[in-house]
Length: 393
Ligand SMILES: Nc1ncnc2c1ncn2[C@@H]1O[C@H](COP(=O)(O)OP(=O)(O)OP(=O)(O)O)[C@@H](O)[C@H]1O
Ligand SMILES: [Mg+2]
Image (cartoon, rainbow, N blue to C red):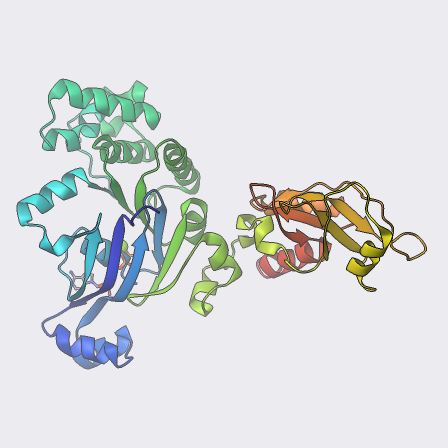
């Protein structure tokens, strides 16, 4: 197992002159609003802990003022914590001396913001190369590297243009290229795509996902948009009033929202689109029978069906599906082994629906290595569709 890229432990930030009073109120269960009403202190972040793994896109999501930006500023130490600590690559950020911290931010933590702050008098290429210039990389080398990332974000033909000659979406891509050019081990993106219209935004998400497929970076991504979080997040942390209320994969959050605050983000979103066969399968609905031989004997089928089941899956010694057996027309156990197509656990819901609707029997769901993990039938599909789509149409 890789060690985590970022570890955040009990991190707190109170803005104001008397953070102690605020933290003791918080420890006693007071909310951010109560603390403010009584003390005038503003809770930015309260007792947040999580780990960001190497190579994942970790999304911080929450309403305006929930503490997302403060949290990332605590991570790159633009803001000093009231309590708690941040480790990057196992190193306590608080112990890094100032000059080294500047270098660390420059080299290992690239930031991309909503306002991309390009320099208007410089060309696209020169803007993309800026981070490298600051880091002292020679002109030829930095322009070569900047050109490579401009190609990656599809802007190579515009290298000699000025930012004003580009659309907003293209300018944002220059911002992304500038961050990528320094080849940071951690990218921090605060509402990087929020100012773009929905189409451009989706396009940028795709650029990011494509890049991520080629070179798995660790990305800390702030967004207030659940759909964006679901599309790009490996895991999502949902923040409310300075606290993290839930951390999970998109599927975990959709299938098991922690509370009404989390559920409210689902409003108007077809969350079922983000579910897979693994999210709706049942693990004990269909009886299992183990057999390695081609001969299947009717009495063991009868024992497996045990009087009430209509189907049983037949597995080999490695838990791979060989087929299914069922009752015959007279209601007795038939020893005939029928072929069945398996569904991969990661198959998206829309494909699962098509396959299940076309099949009379429940279908087996298998892991990537082909081993059996559960089954899906029409009822499972209908349940998930009514639960996730019914309330939002
Ligand atoms: N420098 C500061 N001084 C005082 N209060 C601050 C400061 N920075 C942030 N806050 C407060 O901390 C809380 C969290 O703010 P933060 O900017 O982290 O929220 P956010 O989740 O990023 O919101 P948004 O989605 O609007 O960007 C807010 O109540 C904010 O008013
Ligand atoms: Mg913010």
